[in-house]
Image (cartoon, rainbow, N blue to C red):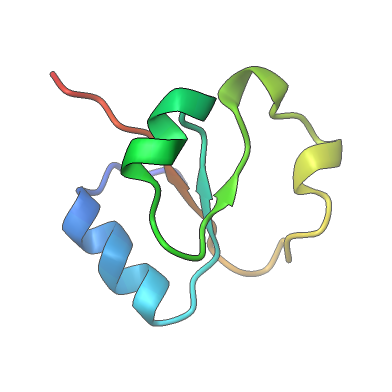
Length: 67
């Protein structure tokens, strides 16, 4: 079940080995990316682009929202 978390929680999960997919635009990805994250632009996200991730493990999807 999806759940909203903040950037600090994303960083902690990444440190523990959780796969992180950032769906930032290419410009935002250069500025705000999290080390080790997979960059998949939201407009290009589909079943094929995430096929390599284990379905039994949580995946963190990261998007920056300044609001």
